[in-house]
Image (cartoon, one colour):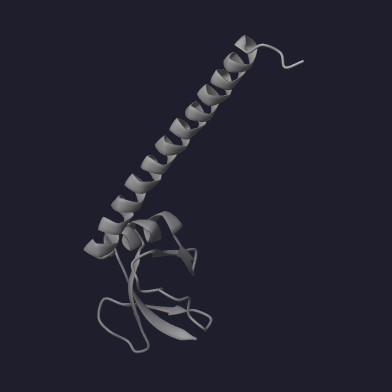
Length: 112
């Protein structure tokens, strides 16, 4: 199907896509249905096709996250670090307890 796309010079990033001619837009044939997010700023026009740039999509997605989401992400990272530390401490405590148990068994008289 014929569409008209606005392409950012130099980067070939698709900035907009419409169905009618407009100044500064390039006429192209693109099969439908159009890819979801084609005008989201992370598709590039390459060799006559709209190609998803995953690295660019990740940047755009990260930049558009709400502040609450970023705060939750930080809290989750902190919680995961604390959990890892507690797990390491728990393992060390279990090892110390086993060593203490072995020591106690070695000094107790045999119950014969």
